Image 1 (cartoon, chains in turn orange, blue, green, cyan):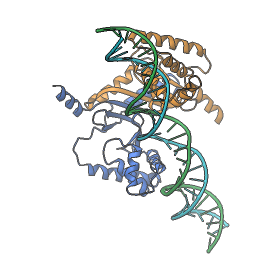
Image 2 (image 1 turned 45 degrees about the horizontal axis):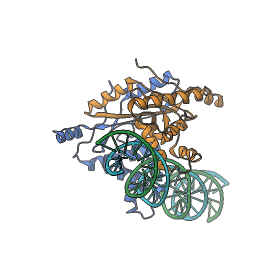
Image 3 (image 1 turned 90 degrees about the vertical axis):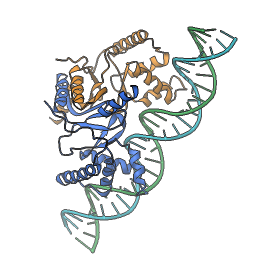
Image 4 (image 1 turned 60 degrees about the vertical axis):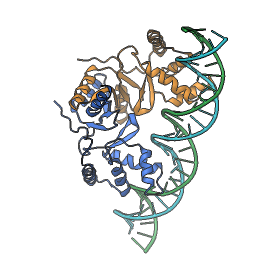
Length: 167
Length: 167
DNA sequence: ACCAGTGCTGTTACACAGTAACAGTCCGAA
DNA sequence: TTCGGACTGTTACTGTGTAACAGCACTGGT
């Protein structure tokens, strides 16, 4: 059976480590594929990794604008496009928002659990799900190019919190 | 094994029938649940069913504006919100667009195959996929409330067309 | 008959999301 | 040196979606 690669980040953890390792992995992924992680792109990636919450493009823009006055929408969107192509960042369509990818080097599926209460996002990597989709598609003669799985619900902690409220 | 409820609509079919049955089902669903399918809402639903292609909100707006001069964004978005809540229409997040739901009375999952070449959308209803997602989620203690599956690729006809081009 | 409440639509005015197109800059290769 | 390509700056715009308030019709209670 397929295994879950990631889990929800615990409410309190050494997030500095998260950021650092994400950036190191990003450097590696880029040098490996001959892509250029410029200061701007690096900075945007860093801002995205500031939390495990999905970030909106215009939030990034306003943060960025505090450092470089010239920042405009294309500044952010171009960096985001690069980061997506490089597999370093995922776009969550149902939220119009972006999250860092924990496994930039692994095959890039797009499977997310989104907690509607605390907002955090966990990335799945379930080959079984992709396989199921491919099988269903094939029955209709459909050839899959890209899959988007976005599941909304409540993470474990938020279920507890909800129960505590109604008790 | 789960079965596919819908397939891609053949390029040429009696689409008048599609529209008519969709509206009849909608009436039924609304009276059954005590919701009001007002003329405005009915008209928006009709416009959406004009094709099996996903429709953008502002396309709907401009079509609507030819009939009622007062139509403004909230006019359309409110109708769409109602139709979604009533299970008559799906929003496709990755396209910012809307399609009619073929089975408004059945349980409302949200599984789509989207052909990137011709733009048509087919709705799936695979309990096995939902079950797989629920199982993966549960392993993380996550409680699923809503799932979004949007698969991009090529439908059978468009694969043929592509092959014909490169031959 | 009157009133209050509710549900639907009209209206204005925004906020947020994303892109086109052109202009500079920098850097490495021919 | 000069050319081309990759990156960023800059302006201006289109597209997507919502807040907030106003009116109006209907319904149910008094």
